[in-house]
Image (tube, rainbow, N blue to C red; front, side, top):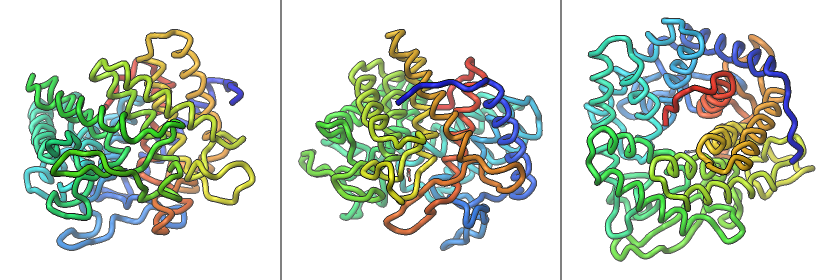
Length: 393
Ligand code: GLY
C-alpha cells in the first residue's frame, strides 16, 4: 500500500466537524441512546425491546456514545461534553447494579468507555467513585464467563445456552482491557490470569496459517478442547470478516501492552499484514476481505477506523522504531482515505462516518453509519491531533 500523508489541517478540519456533530446529537438524543446503526443515514433511538423502553441502555454499543463525548471533552475542554458523559455513566452504573442486559462479554466495550473513563475524568469525586465501583462490578460479572478448563471467556448468551456454550469471537480481545484495568486497580491476579489465558487461546486457535482470522471459535466446555472455527457476521466460515481482522489488529496490540506478551504483538502484526494485503485501492475494506477491487460488495468503513486505531497503538507499543514509524504512517493513510471519501458533508448526517456494515448476512445495518465506526474514527482523529492522549482501553 503506498503511504502518503496529508496536511495536519485535514485531520483538524475533520475533527472539528465530527465534534460539532456530537454536539448536535447530544441535543437531539438527550438522555436516550441512539440505535446501533443509522437507518437511511440517520440514527433512530434504540427501539423498545422486552422490558426496555425506547432509547434505554441495552445492547453492546451504547458506551460508544459517552465514549465520543469524552473524546470531545478532551479535545475541546467544553464542560457540556463532560456533563453529558458523566450523566450517561450514572446510567451505566444503574445498568450493572440492576443486572440489566449483562449476559455478554461486551461488558468490556461497555464499561471501559462509559465507566473507567468517568472514574478518571469526571469533575466530582462521587461520580468518579461511582463509576469505579460500577466498572469493578462489570469486571466481576465478566469473570463469571471464564470457562474452565478451556480458559476462554464465552462471548454470547446465557452460560447454559448449548448453542453458545464454549464459543468466543475475535471481538472479545477488546473486552479484556476491563479485566486488565481491574487487575491494576485491585492487584487481584485472577483478572490478569484470565486475560493471559483467553488471549493465548485466541492467538493459538483463531489466527489461521495465512494470518487471516476466524470470526468465532468453539471450545468443548467440559474438556477444554479447541474444536472448530466458523463465522456469524462474515461471508463464509473460511473467509475473513473485515471487522474481525481489525479487532485482531487493535485487540492483540492492546493486550500486548497490558500483558507484556511479545507473541501478542506478533499476532497483531500478523493480522495487520493480512488486512493491508487485502485492501482495495481506495484503502477502505469491503465488509469481508474475500472481496477485492471491482466488487460491488459494500465497504465497512468502521473496520478501517478500528484498524487505524490499532496501527496507532502499534506505533506506541512496538519497540522496533522502524516498525513503529511504519504503523504510524499506515494509520495516517487509513484516516486520510476515510476523510477523503467517507465523511458526510457538513450538517447532512448525524453519523461521523458513512458506509459501514453491521451484519450483512442478517441484512442489519448495511451501508450505514455505526456507533462504533463513529467512535473509532473520532478516537483515531483525536490520537492524531493529540499524540499525548491517554487510552480509554
Ligand atoms: N462486536 C460486534 C461487531 O463488531 O459487530
